[in-house]
Every structure is written in C-alpha cells, then in structure tokens.
Image (cartoon, rainbow, N blue to C red; front, side, top):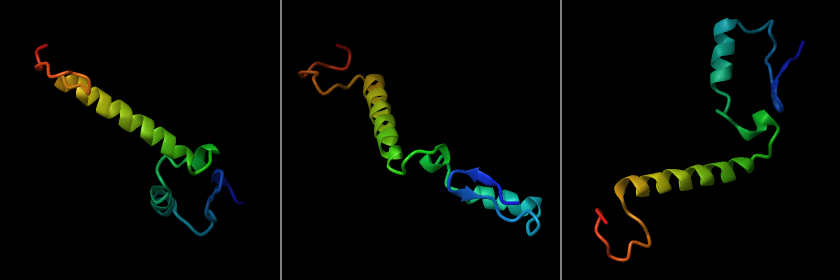
Amino acid sequence: MQLTLAPGFRSPDPMKLQRNDYIQYVDTLPPEAPQMFGLHSNAEIGYLTSQGETLFGTILQCSGGSASSGGKGRDA
C-alpha cells in the first residue's frame, strides 16, 4: 500500500520502516513547500517577498524611520 503524504510526496513502504524511520523521513521533507499544498514551486517567491516587505515596514515604523521623513527628527 503506497500512501501519498502530499502531492508529489509518496510515503515509503510501511513494511520496510519503523516509527522512528518515518519520523526521520518526514523531517527531511521540505518545510511548508508549496507543492505540499498543490501549488507551483514559484508560489513561495511571492509569499516570501510579501513577508519581507511587511517585516521591514514594521521595523521602519518601530524605529521611527521613513523614506519620506524630509529631514525631521525621530520625535517629529
């Protein structure tokens, strides 16, 4: 019996592996790979770009900096 863990990720033969072997196999799978959700492998690029923009925007807000500060001080 061959099970599919996710699209494109087939389960190994259960007669050949023990529980610890399965755990080790699952740990080697790519974390949160777009293919696990049926998406194209390039789908992650947009997600990571958006997360990066959000992260750096939050850092700028916390530090008081802005690209359009016009020379004002941090307290302004």
